[in-house]
Length: 121
Image 1 (cartoon, rainbow, N blue to C red):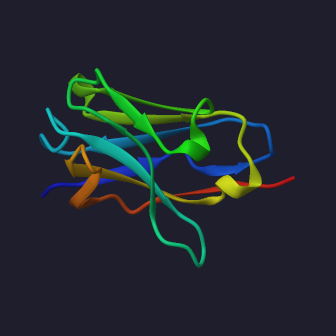
Image 2: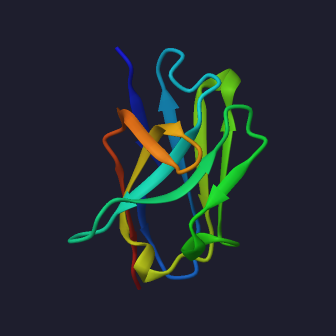
C-alpha cells in the first residue's frame, strides 16, 4: 500500500523555522514530481513548493519564495520542506503529495495525512 507520512509540524513563533519531512513507502516518489501543499481553515488547498524527480528543478509559490526550500533524498524515499522566517499567515495543515504534472503543477491522488503548522506568539 502506498503511503505518504508527514512529520515535523508544530507551534513556532513568528520568524522561527521548521523542517517538514515526508516519508514515502514503496517507490512512490522514485522519479516522480513531489510537492508540498497547504490548507488553512476556510481556504482552498494551495501549492507551496514542488521538486522534479531528480531534484534538479524546483518551483515555489510567490508567498514562500526566499523563505522555504524543498529538497528530496530518493535513496531514503524522503521529501523535505525547510521553512524559515515563518509568518502567522503560514499557519495551515501541510500535505505531501505526488504530482502528475509539472506544468501546470497538478497533484495526483497520493496524499499524506498532513501535519499542522501553527505560527503564533
